[in-house]
Image (cartoon, rainbow, N blue to C red; front, side, top):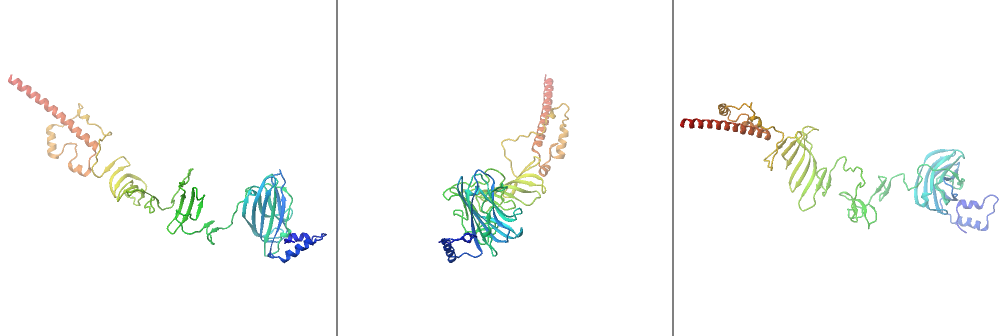
Length: 442
């Protein structure tokens, strides 16, 4: 004697069939040990798909009945012409009256999926077949190899059960379209360590630091692995076993802090959008800083800091968008400016091995035949009145406006060349006087 299911016991009492003594014993044993909820039942169905015939399907038929609650299909496979071992378990939530009177839209999910059976079997949706006037669930066989399967159909319901009415159709051709492989899925959020998950996957664990296992670990603990976690001060991502953490190694854009916030390298307190702190005995760092004032002030800069001293090299804006110059500041004080038109300004002395001024003209025009050299008396009068050489700025003008080095050098050269002409003229006069004196003495 052994305990039997309700559908199995019903087989003993079919019309024109007399139960055996052993079957009566099964009935009594099943009654004595009956512990199953009256509104929960299941039935087993076995079948084998034919070999060398692809795209075959078979329907689990539920008849034209009132169907309510949860129906679960569990399919397990074996080995015949091909390895099809494993299990697929799919659950359907149903509310339907006869004649396609669906009053609760059917939802379903895979709650277990494992083994090579996943490559061969796909369980379809609960649907109404208008040709045969029945509700059904189609089982698709996606390969051509013949494989045996067992289907366990169970139901949980507060209403009438239909398990004893379940049957199988014959095999027929029906290719599956779209997705053809199952995976475990949940229609709602999944929580690990929390009963109230607030995301599709919500992992809640104890506080941890990057040298611990964290809340999530990818990979074997003895090989390169990635861990994630959080604590009261920060969240963290850490690569372990001495392996580097590669972010986007095969390309595509990498975006950090798109809408704000600072990024620090070597520091946990970045002071700018990108702050690089060198980890050695000397406290030095590089920052990319953004200023907010736009009127003739440095707006964006690279700041190099060594101990408490810093140097800014950046852009000066003449307005809200136009760039007027590039500037260098030391401890906030501007020391040099390079304008967009090529001009440069320096605060303090400029020392260099050499200067080459290439755009200025020369002063060779002084030696031209038609050059009008100012007379020496006129020159003396001009100097007496103006207190500076002709065409040379006065001391006051130089103080107020400065001088252009290239142009000023040419002016000085012009005066040297004029002085040379004065010297030549004076030499000629001396030679003439010497000649007269020699003639007089002769």
